Length: 192
Ligand SMILES: C[S@@+](CC[C@H](N)C(=O)[O-])C[C@H]1O[C@@H](n2cnc3c(N)ncnc32)[C@H](O)[C@@H]1O
Image 1 (cartoon, helix red, strand yellow):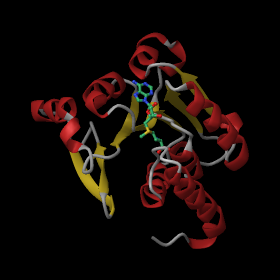
Image 2 (cartoon, protein in one colour):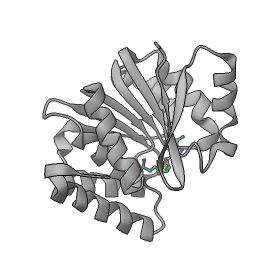
Image 3 (cartoon, rainbow, N blue to C red):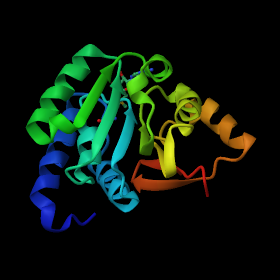
Image 4 (cartoon, rainbow, N blue to C red):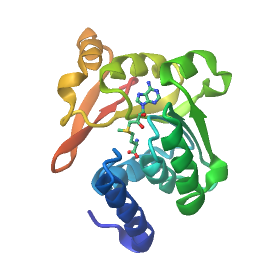
């Protein structure tokens, strides 16, 4: 991983990720986080949806890939994690460009009109056995050329039966990218 000119900015986030993991709070590794930044940039994503905020480390990595006009909606059901995420957004990111919705993701996606999209990129990192349901819930909210990224598909792939069943049904092109030594991210491109 080579950070380039914004090295200090990304080292600060990497330190946050490492400290978060040391507290046994789940979050992306610096490698996976930086890959998210790059994906947002490559896609030119201005509207991003995240399912599974925890304390907001991945949200901050997603935001690093956007310009000032970008905006993120992120969903988290655990109140204490959401409270800490808000603090992290204020400290490490642009909190005004992040909307954090508290509650169960599938319920929010069903009932919250502000989550209608369209989204350029969706990042899924919540309950592993619900990945298939999340993908079904978000695919109709993608902007043209929109992509879906699913985290942890190597480390916890055995729990993602609903996702693999959905992919077996077809019409959901995807590739697993081994983004760090222990894990990988599934890139879904519904239009390709
Ligand atoms: C792996 S952690 C997310 C880590 C975060 N994306 C990061 O990398 O910094 C998963 C989070 O998803 C939340 N979660 C799990 N199932 C959920 C659901 N159905 N709705 C909303 N949040 C959920 C958990 O409370 C937990 O905080």
